[in-house]
Structure formats: C-alpha cells, structure tokens
Length: 73
Image (cartoon, rainbow, N blue to C red; front, side):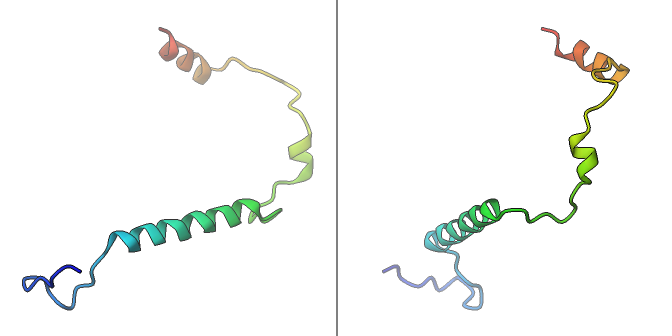
C-alpha cells in the first residue's frame, strides 16, 4: 500500500493503472457490441444507388493522374 503524498491536493482524484485498464476494457466491449449489432445505421443509402453499377466505369481523371505521378517509385 503506497503512503499518501502530502504534496498532492486531496481534492484531485488519482488515476491508477487499474482504472485505465478497466476503462479500456469497457471501451473495447462497447466497440464489440456496436460491431455485432445488425442493421443499425443512421443514414441508410437508397437501395438503387447501392446496387446499380456505374455505366461509365473507370475514368482516368486529373485527380487520378496526379495520384499516379506521386505514387511512382
């Protein structure tokens, strides 16, 4: 058991390693629950936009050409 520090303000809460790991565990469990929940979306896309393929397909635009220039080795 550590001795109390007389220089520490008694009103300031201590943050222990145990508290940090417990918080990380709770956050991980919450993330797992959110990932498992089916079909919970706030902004669902229209079904027609999600299933209809683009009629134009791949287009080599200026934006893509700039990327290709920066990706060269």
